[in-house]
Image (spheres, one colour):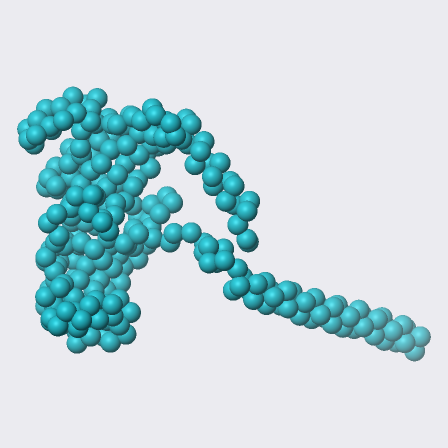
Amino acid sequence: MTDEADNATDMDRRALLQTAGAAVVTGLVAGTAIDARAATQDAERDEAPLGARLQGVQHFGLTVQNMERAYQFYTEVLGGTEVFRHGDFQGDGVQNTLLDDQEIEANARGVNPRTIGVPDLRSGAQRLDVRFIQFDNMVLELLQYREADQPMGSAKSFAEPVEHMSPAFPRMMHICFYVRDDVDFNKFIADLEAESARRGMTQVRANRTVRVMTEADRKAAPRSSNTNRVTAEPSNGWELIYCKGPEGEQLEFVKALGPVKKRFSEALAKRQQTIVR
């Protein structure tokens, strides 16, 4: 290779290195600017209204007596998919995180925490297991507090189940499932009861829209009474049924059609437009 060729090659290399160096510097400057903007946005987010700092509802939790029974219902009957399970939770940190307020309440009453249903995760005498189940737009967490000598998935919980499960009790909650628009609601409820009964989950019983005073009356009611169809404003288009789950928990199944579906859609769109992102 000649000297002129060598010099030309060296010049090309220097130009390439200069260009690359400039690109690196530009990238670093741009990256620094992006980092700075991100830091500013994070700081602004931390000063935003509380609602603007949320991403929505992540999951609902249900404490159960029989983990395997509840798991079977929400996965095999209602079709949820397990995300993951974790268990044998115990120790001081778990106790404090979940139950501090209840221990304070027991101390204020001057009673043993166990008498008001507070387990002793701190010493490991009781344990906590959880399973997360994914539905299309919601995650359900099943929780079971059990004695340490009981296996995971046990049918025996640490505390006895609440007997009075009327939805009128303050603090009583329910889980609501959204039924597809094109599904026969009356048949869905009949199939839900039949499939649950086939699995021995006789607690799964839906209410009727007609007055019944005995279980025999409820079973004999016409299928058309399975669904409550609301026609009054502003809930017109709402269809629903209340139902007990396998643990005695309160469930609701709904359709939102026509005007009420439009109201929910418009409310969501308005929120998405106005909330700080």
